[in-house]
Image 1 (cartoon, one colour):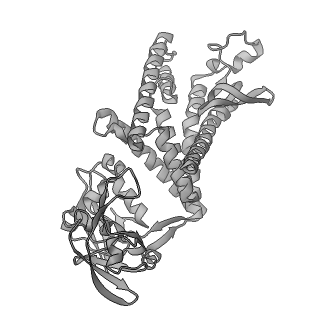
Image 2: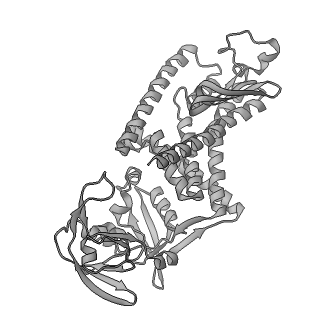
Image 3: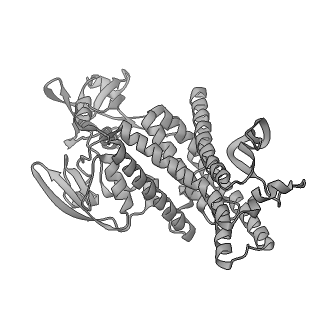
Length: 455
């Protein structure tokens, strides 16, 4: 438990460190290009814990006490308490042309987007472990069943765009929620198109993991493998052994461990006939599920037979795949995917604002720390992908036209370009109050969502 907590905290700080430094370096580099004097580059807020002055301008590079962000402090007459040397006045931020100020502020979030492109490009070059887009039999009450999708159908394209693996299929479905789409299906030796409707499905459901379940699209993992048998439970009494493969329960074919769990759910005390493949033979045994507590104390008692489940290695090896590109194609795909993810994030914020998506979709530092820990334990590719996703989210949030955020400053500068004069101090003061209120509300909301997910 303590180890898991330390991993999550370390992964979170590492994630924040990379993304904040990249963001602030964007501001810093463009400020230097525009010949603006930078006084301090700080990772973190609050009290400075360590600093060192470097360069001709003796810029202070600092680490501060609260590691949840950072800032670049530039020479600015509006913020300086001491008199500024005459020679430094042309290098003050507030004296720069509006185009320079716009570029300096925009550079932060744009650097986060560039970082996401590079991170995703790296994953595509190294190779992304995935699973072929092969379907298992949909549940009878789902649209997929009504469309007569079958076990081992493989979706090879969505709207004419090739689907390379399961994650690719999920992405294309997610992009097209609310629309009519055409799936290209490979079945046996035939390839045919199947029009489907995703009208009525929303990205909000995807965030809660419900879209694919509701529609009936599930990956084919094959019959579940028994990896453990508790000696005091019904499975052991029925003679089930480690290494057995459960192909069916009460005549219903199983094509994943999840099918097994669903087959015994609600059937405590009811005799169920398990069809077992052992070595090269099939046999049937009767098992009566009993109510028992799951190892996870957060969950209530559930019907169980006392087995551990996993995937059949023969099946997973058959359908496992690695998606890999040459550097040029990887860069192109990384850029396209970054743009698509950024646009989807913008649309989600818009839907939240107009009330058509739940505020529960917003996550805070606790959820990010949890996902950071999970992704770093899952391997290099997962963690790098996670970094890219958070970097895109950080860029989009900072580009929102909210005072105090980069997008708020860009809004002021855009107004200045149109009006040919700066926004008044009074307007900026009112904007600052609105921005503070928004940020406080956002922090409260995301933390509330985090604790709701946690408990």
